[in-house]
Image 1 (spheres, rainbow, N blue to C red):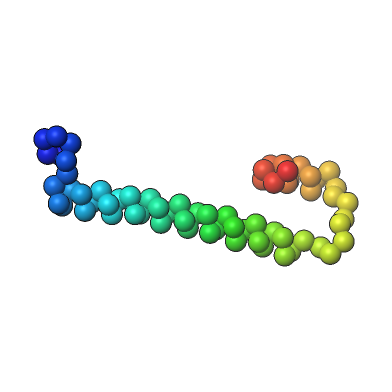
Image 2 (image 1 turned 135 degrees about the horizontal axis):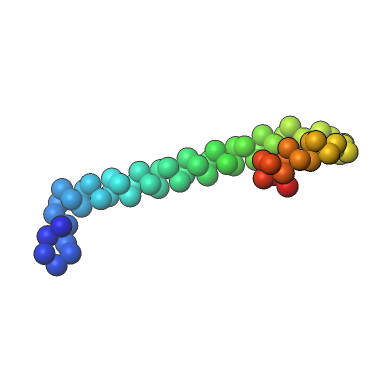
Length: 65
């Protein structure tokens, strides 16, 4: 870093690339989370079903309830 807290052209470019990579990672994670939620919604049965105690425990372990 240069005096006064300013970045050189190369440093600024590298910083920009790093920030863009972080944004891309967050966007991919958000898309993956949304896709998983979508798959859960479309795979649900048409009629609600009573869950067994084991199924409830599995869902709690997964953090879904």
